[in-house]
Amino acid sequence: MKVFIEPIGRLINEFAKLPGVGAKTAQRFAYKIINMSEAEAQNFADAILGAKKKVRYCRICGNFSEEEVCDICKTRPNEIICVVKEPKDVVAIEKLNEFGGVYHVLHGAISPLDGVGPDDINIKGLLKRIGEGGVKEVIMATDTDVEGEATAMYISGLIKPLGIKVTRLARGLPIGTDLEYADEVSLARAFVERKTI
Image (cartoon, rainbow, N blue to C red; front, side, top):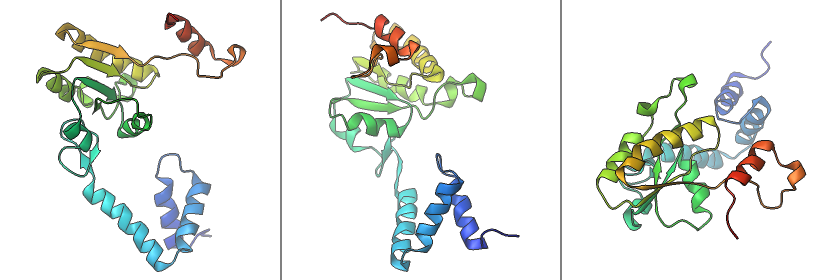
């Protein structure tokens, strides 16, 4: 016996394909769409199709853009490049209002177990940008997991011989953490990356 009629089942299946959306959440989303007015549903559909048609990757940094070159690459100096895994990482850093340089989006991380090597991510684009001159520092802002660390180490090994300063975002204890509750890796990293006060 079918639990859902075909149109609702199809909608649930499509929502369930999204990352982080389980069966119950997909079902709630589907019911929300069904209960929308036709105009609201049309606006929702138009927003999805509009984003799909208009959003592209910046040809310089690989971030999302509506044009060939994104606003950040157009307006900021390229002396400092912050290397990130995905466009969502650019958004996270931009929310801080602390960084005034440009970005380079790798669109992945080196992960031999998943069959992702250096040629499968946007490292060549980064080296090309550096080769064009003017870059003084590259900040590695990849994730702190095994893949992110491997990616940062690999890229820094390529860049250091070029005479470019390579830095890594500091890691350690989050503000407000009690030492007794800190995980061992974060505590160890905090000791290694301690600073003079």
